[in-house]
Length: 165
Ligand code: UTP
Image 1 (cartoon, rainbow, N blue to C red):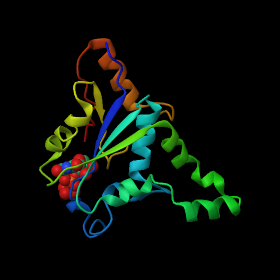
Image 2: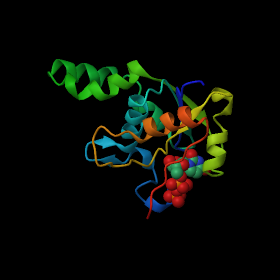
Image 3: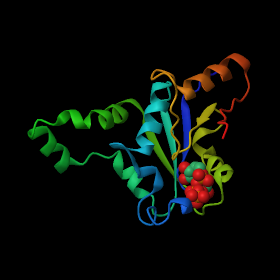
Image 4: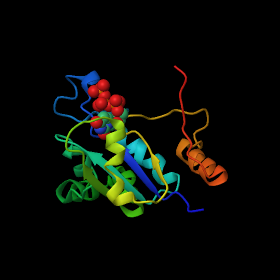
């Protein structure tokens, strides 16, 4: 049984429920305390042992992939000002996971977004994490994606995490 090493993160939705906040800012980039939502999502995937992240992007969403690029001027200033620790969370992601970006040419829904990852994922097992959804658990060390990957490896079947509302 192959281990789950790939994750697909759909982030190409139009974000109409958060309009007008999402008119020019992807909802996945809206901050929760001091970090954009997508950073929590990618950290969860990374901590679950994911090595390749396939981001599904759409029009107006380039801020998400730009976020993980090196910003030389800004980063140089932070280092010179003795604030390098601020960069740690992003640096950890850059050095631990590969981020691949795929364009969903039209927002045709979540299922279609996941399907767009096929050329990169192929037949490998993969996790899907929503780019706009973070889950708060009772214990800080609990990782939902890691649970789902364990279930997959134990039962040899797809697993879904649902939230009662
Ligand atoms: P949502 O249904 O919450 O996103 O999809 P949405 O379509 O942006 O929602 P509205 O417009 O506020 O109702 C869950 C995740 O799937 C992505 C979204 O970006 C979100 O992270 N998604 C959704 C896509 O990647 N492509 C789509 O066509 C739809």
